[in-house]
Image (cartoon, rainbow, N blue to C red; front, top):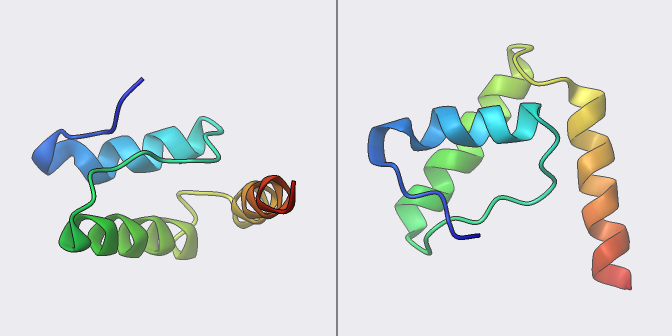
Length: 68
């Protein structure tokens, strides 16, 4: 499994992955890419494209994993 690297479709793929239940997105380490995806996922949540409770649950699972 590798990072999502599809240029213009990157944000759409990231939102679709979150919507499908992905807790972790693997992205190329380019600051502009990371900021763009973060902002897009945040906006998708604010506009109801992603369920806020699902995003919170995903974040909690990641925090639990981090503590492990």
